[in-house]
Each structure stands twice: as C-alpha cells, then as structure tokens.
Length: 120
Image (spheres, rainbow, N blue to C red):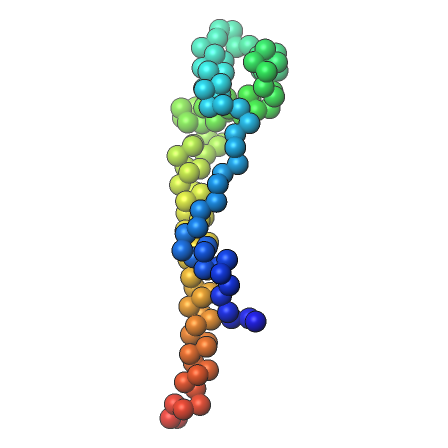
C-alpha cells in the first residue's frame, strides 16, 4: 500500500519522543574525573587513572577530549553545544523529509482524483 501513512508514521510526525539510552557512568563521576585530570600536575596516565576510578580508559579519554573541545583547546572536535545543535538540525531535517513525503503522496492522490474530470 504505497502512499498510505501508517499509525507509526503519524506518531513520528506528531513528535512522538523516544527515550535516550541510559548512561553507563553517572554524570558526577564524569565531571569529577575530568576535573581531577585537568588539575593534576604532572598529567596522570589516563589508563592508570581510569583503573583507579573504575571506568574504561577510552571512556575517560573521550571525556577529557570533549572537555578540551568545550574549553576551546581543541579544533578537531565539535563542542557539546555544536553536537546538540547538529542533532537538533538532523532531527528537524528528518521531520521535514517525512512531511514532504506525506505532502508528495497526498498531492499525487488528489491529482489522480481530480485528473480525469479536469478540462484540458
């Protein structure tokens, strides 16, 4: 049934929200770990610090890199605000694409209904 909109699609068009995945590590632990790393002199070995905190070393490394990007110390990554804006724009883009598809389908449907009776 190409052209018909399902209930699921209507829910998506009306803005049905999905829940984000739960975070593996609490936000407080993340902030504390980054603060500990950034204030330490000399800088600790990330792998050893991660073991002491009970987190995966790559998670700690990513948190530190993101904090550096947010502080303007890195140009190779997006800041948290830029990531949020990009996600919002992608979501809006997807919604607009769905709306355009619905309008395109409705336009084709009504054109087919009116087509034979329209004078040429």
